[in-house]
Image (cartoon, rainbow, N blue to C red; front, side):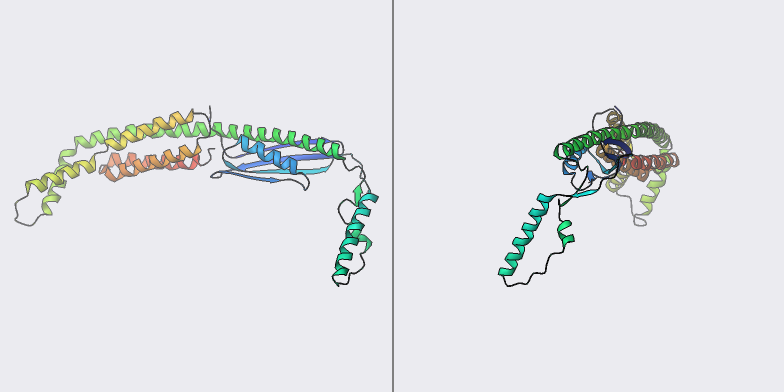
Length: 304
C-alpha cells in the first residue's frame, strides 16, 4: 500500500431537469481533519450527507467542498407567480402582529404591498421544484458529491504514490549515510591514539601546576571522554528508525503523524552524532544526514 497525500483536487458536474450543479473539492495540509462545505441555502440535506462522506473517507487535511447550482443550459427562464395561500397566511401573520402592537399602545404603519410580496413563499418561480422533485435533486447532488469525494481520494492517492517513492528514496539515503557514519567511526577509532593523547594533555593542563595527577580523577576524565565519543548507540537507533520507517511505508491507514514523529527522532540522533563526532569524516556524514532528514521532515508534512 502507498501513502496518501493530504493535497488534491476533484470536480464533478451533474444536472436534473432545469437544474445543473458542479462540485469542486480541494484539499491541503492540516494537523487534523478540517471540513468546510459551501452549498446554496436550502441544501441542508446535501451538506449533511457530504460532511459524513468526507469524514468517513479522510482522516487528515483541510478539505473545502463547494456546490454551485445554476439553471441547466437550454432551460427556459421562469417567471414568478403568486401563491394565494401563502399570501393569505403572510397577511394574517402581519394582521396578528399589528393587533398585538396596537393593544400595547403602539402605532403601526400600513404595510406596503412589496413587503408582503417579499415574504418567503408568497412569490414562487414557475418551474420551481415540488417536494418530490426537490428530494430527487438533493439525492442526485449527494450522489455526485460522493463521486467527487472518491475522485478526491484518488487524486490524493496518486500524489501519495509520488510521495511514497520520494520518502522511500530519502530513507534509503539515511540508511546509506548511517553506514558511512559507521565507517567513519571505525576510522576515528584507528586514529584514537593521537586524539586521546591530545585530550589527555588538555586534562593534565587543567590540573594545578606541579600537582601530581589524581589517578581516580584521571580515570574518570578518560571514561567521560570515551562515553562522549561513543556513537554506537546513535547508529543503532538510526538503523532502528530506518526499519520502522520502511515498515510504515507499507502499512495500512494514515501514517503522517507517525512519520512526523520518526523524522523528529532521526533529527535527534543526527544532532547527537554531530555533537560527538570530533572527526572530519564523521562530522561530514552527520551533517549530510541532517540535510536529508530536514528534507524528509518537509515531505512527511504532506502525508495523511
